[in-house]
Length: 242
Image (cartoon, rainbow, N blue to C red; front, side, top):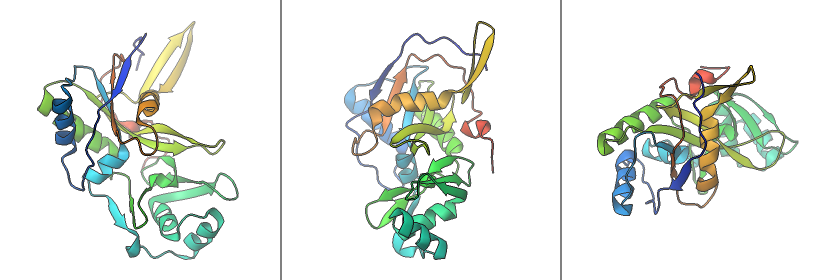
Protein backbone atom coordinates (compact mmCIF):
# COMPACT_ATOMS: atom_id res chain seq x y z
CA UNK A 1 0.00 0.00 0.00
CA UNK A 2 1.50 3.35 -1.02
CA UNK A 3 1.47 6.02 1.64
CA UNK A 4 -0.64 9.12 1.31
CA UNK A 5 0.81 12.28 2.86
CA UNK A 6 -0.42 13.52 6.23
CA UNK A 7 0.90 16.92 7.26
CA UNK A 8 -1.25 17.25 10.36
CA UNK A 9 -4.26 15.83 12.16
CA UNK A 10 -6.44 16.47 15.20
CA UNK A 11 -7.49 14.07 17.94
CA UNK A 12 -10.08 14.25 20.70
CA UNK A 13 -11.68 11.91 23.21
CA UNK A 14 -15.40 11.16 23.31
CA UNK A 15 -16.30 12.12 26.85
CA UNK A 16 -17.91 11.92 29.25
CA UNK A 17 -18.29 8.26 28.35
CA UNK A 18 -20.68 6.11 30.42
CA UNK A 19 -19.50 2.96 32.16
CA UNK A 20 -20.27 0.11 29.81
CA UNK A 21 -22.07 -3.00 31.04
CA UNK A 22 -21.61 -6.51 29.62
CA UNK A 23 -23.63 -6.95 26.45
CA UNK A 24 -24.23 -3.22 25.90
CA UNK A 25 -24.46 -1.93 22.34
CA UNK A 26 -21.05 -0.28 21.93
CA UNK A 27 -21.89 1.48 18.67
CA UNK A 28 -25.13 2.75 20.19
CA UNK A 29 -23.28 3.99 23.27
CA UNK A 30 -20.73 5.83 21.12
CA UNK A 31 -23.55 7.38 19.09
CA UNK A 32 -25.23 8.46 22.33
CA UNK A 33 -22.07 10.27 23.43
CA UNK A 34 -21.85 11.94 20.02
CA UNK A 35 -25.45 13.13 20.35
CA UNK A 36 -25.08 14.38 23.93
CA UNK A 37 -21.89 16.30 23.18
CA UNK A 38 -23.07 17.69 19.86
CA UNK A 39 -20.22 15.97 18.03
CA UNK A 40 -20.59 14.92 14.41
CA UNK A 41 -18.35 12.35 12.78
CA UNK A 42 -16.95 13.14 9.37
CA UNK A 43 -16.07 10.91 6.46
CA UNK A 44 -12.51 9.70 6.94
CA UNK A 45 -12.49 9.94 10.74
CA UNK A 46 -10.77 7.09 12.54
CA UNK A 47 -12.25 5.94 15.84
CA UNK A 48 -9.73 4.29 18.12
CA UNK A 49 -11.46 2.12 20.69
CA UNK A 50 -9.90 0.54 23.76
CA UNK A 51 -10.07 -3.25 23.56
CA UNK A 52 -11.48 -3.47 27.08
CA UNK A 53 -14.79 -1.87 26.16
CA UNK A 54 -15.05 -4.19 23.16
CA UNK A 55 -14.47 -7.14 25.50
CA UNK A 56 -17.12 -5.81 27.89
CA UNK A 57 -19.65 -5.43 25.09
CA UNK A 58 -18.83 -8.97 23.93
CA UNK A 59 -19.12 -10.41 27.46
CA UNK A 60 -15.54 -11.68 27.63
CA UNK A 61 -15.54 -11.70 31.44
CA UNK A 62 -14.01 -14.56 33.43
CA UNK A 63 -14.76 -15.10 37.12
CA UNK A 64 -11.41 -15.91 38.76
CA UNK A 65 -13.20 -18.27 41.16
CA UNK A 66 -13.78 -20.53 38.17
CA UNK A 67 -10.05 -20.75 37.34
CA UNK A 68 -7.91 -23.53 38.82
CA UNK A 69 -4.19 -22.72 38.56
CA UNK A 70 -1.90 -25.55 37.52
CA UNK A 71 1.68 -26.16 38.68
CA UNK A 72 3.19 -23.92 35.98
CA UNK A 73 0.86 -21.07 36.85
CA UNK A 74 1.67 -21.43 40.55
CA UNK A 75 5.40 -21.32 39.80
CA UNK A 76 5.05 -18.25 37.57
CA UNK A 77 2.84 -16.58 40.16
CA UNK A 78 5.54 -17.01 42.79
CA UNK A 79 8.14 -15.47 40.46
CA UNK A 80 6.11 -12.54 39.20
CA UNK A 81 3.74 -11.77 42.05
CA UNK A 82 0.73 -12.02 39.73
CA UNK A 83 -2.31 -13.88 41.07
CA UNK A 84 -2.09 -17.53 40.06
CA UNK A 85 -5.54 -17.40 38.46
CA UNK A 86 -4.49 -14.53 36.20
CA UNK A 87 -1.32 -16.40 35.28
CA UNK A 88 -3.37 -19.47 34.39
CA UNK A 89 -5.54 -17.36 32.07
CA UNK A 90 -2.36 -16.03 30.43
CA UNK A 91 -1.14 -19.58 29.86
CA UNK A 92 -4.53 -20.68 28.55
CA UNK A 93 -4.62 -17.75 26.10
CA UNK A 94 -1.08 -18.12 24.75
CA UNK A 95 1.06 -20.56 22.81
CA UNK A 96 4.37 -19.57 24.44
CA UNK A 97 5.83 -16.90 26.70
CA UNK A 98 8.97 -15.53 28.32
CA UNK A 99 9.76 -13.25 31.23
CA UNK A 100 11.22 -9.83 30.43
CA UNK A 101 13.14 -9.99 33.75
CA UNK A 102 13.39 -12.61 36.47
CA UNK A 103 10.23 -11.13 38.01
CA UNK A 104 8.34 -10.38 34.81
CA UNK A 105 6.42 -8.99 33.09
CA UNK A 106 5.15 -12.03 31.22
CA UNK A 107 5.47 -11.50 27.46
CA UNK A 108 3.15 -13.99 25.78
CA UNK A 109 2.35 -14.94 22.21
CA UNK A 110 -1.43 -14.94 22.18
CA UNK A 111 -3.15 -17.77 20.33
CA UNK A 112 -4.44 -15.10 17.91
CA UNK A 113 -0.83 -14.40 16.91
CA UNK A 114 -0.15 -11.18 18.82
CA UNK A 115 2.79 -10.83 21.20
CA UNK A 116 1.34 -9.07 24.22
CA UNK A 117 2.18 -8.44 27.84
CA UNK A 118 0.09 -10.85 29.93
CA UNK A 119 -1.57 -12.10 26.71
CA UNK A 120 -3.79 -9.02 26.81
CA UNK A 121 -5.54 -10.17 30.00
CA UNK A 122 -7.10 -7.16 31.75
CA UNK A 123 -7.92 -7.32 35.46
CA UNK A 124 -11.51 -6.62 36.48
CA UNK A 125 -11.15 -5.74 40.13
CA UNK A 126 -10.02 -8.52 42.44
CA UNK A 127 -12.53 -11.14 41.34
CA UNK A 128 -12.46 -11.20 37.56
CA UNK A 129 -10.63 -10.56 34.30
CA UNK A 130 -11.40 -9.55 30.74
CA UNK A 131 -10.13 -11.61 27.84
CA UNK A 132 -9.42 -10.13 24.42
CA UNK A 133 -12.21 -10.20 21.81
CA UNK A 134 -12.43 -13.55 20.03
CA UNK A 135 -11.66 -11.94 16.65
CA UNK A 136 -10.61 -8.29 17.01
CA UNK A 137 -10.66 -7.60 13.26
CA UNK A 138 -14.22 -8.94 13.03
CA UNK A 139 -15.16 -6.83 16.07
CA UNK A 140 -13.72 -3.75 14.35
CA UNK A 141 -15.65 -4.47 11.15
CA UNK A 142 -18.93 -4.95 13.04
CA UNK A 143 -18.41 -1.75 15.01
CA UNK A 144 -17.45 0.22 11.88
CA UNK A 145 -20.52 -1.03 10.00
CA UNK A 146 -22.82 -0.17 12.90
CA UNK A 147 -21.33 3.33 13.26
CA UNK A 148 -21.79 4.00 9.56
CA UNK A 149 -25.41 2.87 9.87
CA UNK A 150 -26.02 5.04 12.95
CA UNK A 151 -24.20 8.17 11.81
CA UNK A 152 -24.11 8.03 8.01
CA UNK A 153 -20.40 8.90 8.09
CA UNK A 154 -17.87 6.62 6.46
CA UNK A 155 -15.38 6.08 9.25
CA UNK A 156 -12.66 3.59 10.09
CA UNK A 157 -12.16 1.77 13.39
CA UNK A 158 -8.98 0.67 15.14
CA UNK A 159 -9.16 -1.45 18.28
CA UNK A 160 -6.23 -0.65 20.57
CA UNK A 161 -4.68 -2.45 23.51
CA UNK A 162 -2.08 -1.48 26.09
CA UNK A 163 1.18 -3.35 25.73
CA UNK A 164 4.62 -3.39 27.26
CA UNK A 165 7.95 -4.11 25.62
CA UNK A 166 10.46 -6.65 26.83
CA UNK A 167 13.36 -4.18 26.61
CA UNK A 168 11.96 -1.31 28.69
CA UNK A 169 9.63 -0.31 31.49
CA UNK A 170 6.20 1.13 30.92
CA UNK A 171 3.39 0.56 28.47
CA UNK A 172 2.45 1.83 25.05
CA UNK A 173 -0.61 1.26 22.85
CA UNK A 174 -0.83 -0.99 19.79
CA UNK A 175 -3.55 -2.07 17.38
CA UNK A 176 -5.13 -5.51 17.62
CA UNK A 177 -8.04 -4.99 15.22
CA UNK A 178 -8.88 -2.66 12.34
CA UNK A 179 -11.56 -2.01 9.77
CA UNK A 180 -11.63 0.54 6.98
CA UNK A 181 -7.94 1.41 7.22
CA UNK A 182 -4.99 -0.63 6.02
CA UNK A 183 -2.80 -2.01 8.79
CA UNK A 184 0.41 -1.59 6.77
CA UNK A 185 1.63 1.49 4.93
CA UNK A 186 4.63 1.76 2.63
CA UNK A 187 6.51 5.03 2.53
CA UNK A 188 9.10 5.96 -0.06
CA UNK A 189 11.72 8.70 0.00
CA UNK A 190 14.93 9.14 -1.98
CA UNK A 191 14.52 5.70 -3.51
CA UNK A 192 14.12 3.98 -0.14
CA UNK A 193 10.94 2.13 0.77
CA UNK A 194 9.80 1.38 4.30
CA UNK A 195 6.86 -0.71 5.46
CA UNK A 196 5.17 0.71 8.55
CA UNK A 197 2.67 -0.82 10.95
CA UNK A 198 0.27 2.01 10.26
CA UNK A 199 -2.56 1.05 12.61
CA UNK A 200 -0.04 0.84 15.46
CA UNK A 201 0.96 4.44 14.74
CA UNK A 202 -2.73 5.39 14.83
CA UNK A 203 -3.29 3.52 18.09
CA UNK A 204 -0.25 5.12 19.70
CA UNK A 205 -1.39 8.60 18.69
CA UNK A 206 -4.77 7.96 20.30
CA UNK A 207 -3.06 6.48 23.35
CA UNK A 208 -1.77 9.91 24.31
CA UNK A 209 -5.40 10.88 24.89
CA UNK A 210 -6.83 7.59 26.12
CA UNK A 211 -4.12 6.95 28.71
CA UNK A 212 -3.58 3.66 30.51
CA UNK A 213 -5.55 3.68 33.75
CA UNK A 214 -8.45 5.64 35.13
CA UNK A 215 -8.90 7.99 32.17
CA UNK A 216 -12.50 6.99 31.64
CA UNK A 217 -12.37 7.84 27.93
CA UNK A 218 -12.15 4.61 25.95
CA UNK A 219 -12.81 6.13 22.51
CA UNK A 220 -10.83 8.75 20.61
CA UNK A 221 -11.48 10.28 17.20
CA UNK A 222 -8.54 11.04 14.92
CA UNK A 223 -9.34 13.44 12.11
CA UNK A 224 -7.30 14.47 9.10
CA UNK A 225 -5.14 11.36 8.69
CA UNK A 226 -4.73 10.30 5.07
CA UNK A 227 -5.11 6.56 4.57
CA UNK A 228 -6.11 3.88 2.12
CA UNK A 229 -9.42 2.21 2.94
CA UNK A 230 -8.97 -1.51 3.55
CA UNK A 231 -10.48 -4.35 5.54
CA UNK A 232 -7.33 -6.50 5.54
CA UNK A 233 -7.17 -6.16 9.32
CA UNK A 234 -4.33 -6.31 11.81
CA UNK A 235 -4.10 -10.09 11.49
CA UNK A 236 -2.82 -9.65 7.94
CA UNK A 237 0.49 -8.23 9.15
CA UNK A 238 1.22 -10.88 11.79
CA UNK A 239 4.10 -13.30 11.25
CA UNK A 240 2.29 -16.04 13.19
CA UNK A 241 -1.41 -16.28 12.46
CA UNK A 242 -3.65 -18.98 13.93
